[in-house]
Image (cartoon, rainbow, N blue to C red; front, side):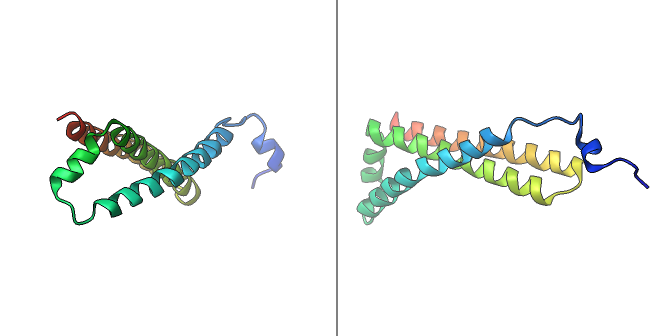
Length: 125
């Protein structure tokens, strides 16, 4: 039996002071992804039927390479933020929650790094 009120239980725990920043980052990455995704889809459609050399030439364009790097970074950051919220909301075991969040962050950094390096290898080749 617990004799402390909900306020007594919460007092002293403080605020994580991270929720507002997390919320804003998720919204900003979502807003950035709208024009980036439209640009990417439009260019992929325009390149349909082309050979590998045409695609490589498109990636070698500095504007295309830069926007592709931004697209990859924003996509993985946005996905990581969203998955973190899902894990925090639905995983109730603290150890499992921490491990899953670390795994998602690690995987998003590794996969974003692979995507960015891939774009740069094509662009700088």
